[in-house]
Length: 158
Length: 157
Image (cartoon, rainbow over all chains, first blue to last red; front, top):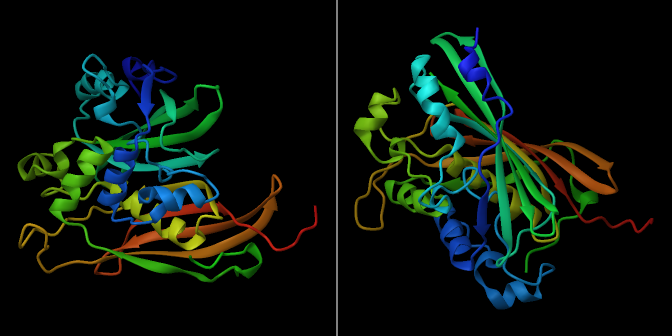
């Protein structure tokens, strides 16, 4: 049985993160992936493309947000949850996976608001013992209110 | 300019041109900075051991980004990645560095994919694929799927 203390995190919304999509950050991301598609690198090329400017690779936003975008006073849902999970014996976390839906292209210069929400927490038996899964949904919204993308990230705790 | 990939030209069962990748410690440092993920699991062997994975492991999200590149390289700019998901099934360990930029000899990973569906939905010509990352032992360490929208030749609107 999932302790009540953990259960009450389901549905909890975290603080909003403002993400400025910078050209330099797009290049650093593409470089780290080893992706030299000119649409991320070459302004002239990108200007002539259907997008009209440099775009961000799908899933550029972070994991699913960038810790470095959080700012000095930000507390993530994961950090809030950590001591409660530790009390229940879950101290080790691994990335379980991610699901994305992309609604519109993200261009250099866009500003997105990322809003995280814990949508599920559940336990499951495995060969190595009980595992706990947390599913966090993040919506990335433009200033106009238009949804740019949605991510669902799963962490597995042991 | 790359040739345009049309919906009509994609067959169910066909393979996506594979993409080789080498994960190195250097790459993991770059990725940590680029994605803003400073979890010591990916650079501190002692911490990684305490987490039960032996030593520093490759970021799952880097493998996710490789698979996204597999798709975007294949569909080109006229194609749109609509949905993507993946699960991290096994951990991978990066190669060490021999020089400032060259990795030690070792494992190469292959990003691969296959078309599993083709349909029209929401006025979009969509293709569904399964994708995965394969290690040196031909094990699929990351499994995923993607839905893409491709341009079509029929002008029946």
